Image 1 (cartoon, one colour):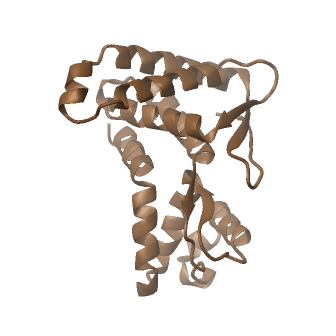
Image 2: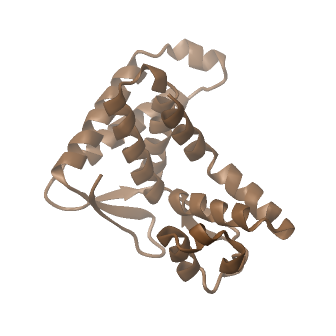
Length: 204
């Protein structure tokens, strides 16, 4: 999935400019998700205590379709919309075994794109020394990018994308330091939905 994704510090939205093929894939996924959600039994959702969840998931499907409507200029995806669309994709991932290979591929691409757009607050502590990581991870481009971003970690909450949170989790786990257990726990909780969705897609 190609296109330009950008976000300025302090913004509550992400600018997304997708190529025509990527936009068409997202639009198709949104339509498929909406179709599946519209066939859900609302009473069942109420019985299991998920009151109000189904309408939110359907909103997420609409956001996906809107993402796929190219207007010739970047679309500004607000944080609430990004999280709704991400939740919808996680729901679709629960039905992975019923999906064809092409749709699983598109679903993974869209989930990874949305993980770049969904931002969360986390109390980031200093990253472990790069030398603590296995050699292959030390050379990984995304791992090294995190060390560039967090040269001077601030105190208190710091905003990170779900995609970055998953990479940070990999860093802290690979370092194997006892003092990082609290950070690992927080990042495990933050990335739970993303990790579950990707696992289901890959294990189908």
